[in-house]
View 1 (spheres, one colour):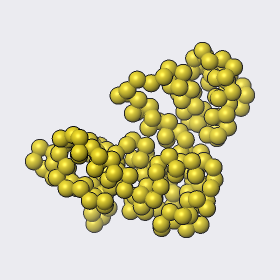
View 2 (cartoon, helix red, strand yellow):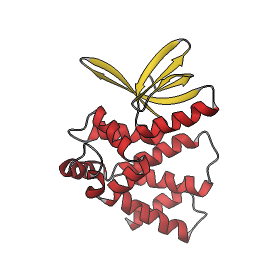
View 3 (tube, helix red, strand yellow):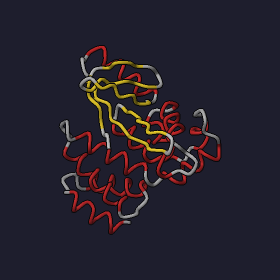
View 4 (cartoon, one colour):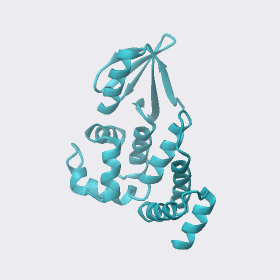
Length: 204
């Protein structure tokens, strides 16, 4: 599995990027949001880092690239969990909406908002919401935790996210779990993740 590429940009177009990794050029299809980030990075850095997902089909091995862990996680969710959505459409969805906007629309159940993305009709939008509504929150939290390893994270926020991720993993709806955690954090800002999880289980 190729999980990321690091090296100078050999070529960059809105649809794909080529990274020179020690003399070998790796081409990855990318969403427009990643194109914008790579353009900015190329202006200030000699090397770029691109997270990747390799998709293997009978007739092709295709590498997809993403600037953030959140984008890659949502791409994986779409491809692996929503019937009728393949890698190309998943990439188009991420090009048509930012990862945060997409997540918010799914959690809110806003099919009309999703339908405005090119290639996504009403039925597909409704299917995305049904399949991902209780998964997208946990996935974004996990992506945030992965990214947090490289930067300082407010302790209270990390504790709340740990507890929320555990609740979603136990099968609770993301919206219900988030509300319970927010209420508990207000009542006891110094609670540990274990205490918050235990109290949330009593509420839910």
